[in-house]
Image 1: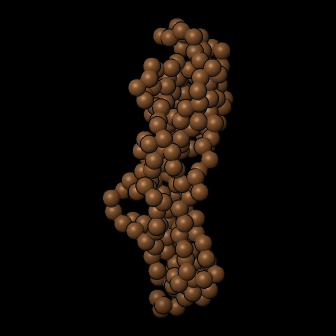
Image 2 (image 1 turned 120 degrees about the vertical axis):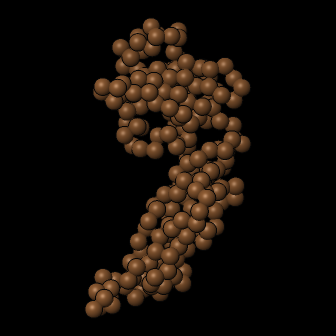
Image 3 (image 1 turned 180 degrees about the vertical axis):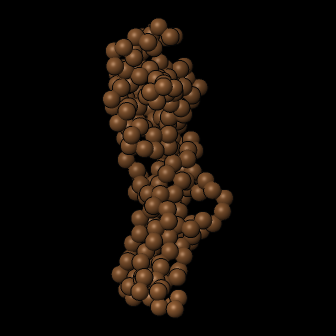
Length: 197
């Protein structure tokens, strides 16, 4: 059930300061820094186009990565900031924070719905309306769930599924402190229009 953590490949950056950062950018890299976990900060270079691809995929700031740097141990990191060029809006610097397996992080976790055929509301023509296909949860870095599961067994037209109705993986908790809606089963459009007449 644990989520596969994507690899993120970087190189050690020789030299620090503006000159080294400018040189990295000229060579097609984005300079970055890895800090935290009571260790020395590590200056890195990230290949520009691979970073751009990850940024365009979305959820970059809430994705846990397995950082691979040649000559260093693999380390779990989460992005804590992307500086961008104010004119072109392209990345110019990235900050990563090292995490221990016991660190708590906020991540968006996919919601999976099961047992559609066991829901009387759907059998009668109702529609499952997903309000939140992903939910932001606070989880432990060493035990990130791949998804959370909503069982639709016994759900009827008009039923609303809230976050408190779902059994969350051990150690996970929502970042929002209210009982928000995940999904509902709405009446078929033909049934709704006859009700309104």
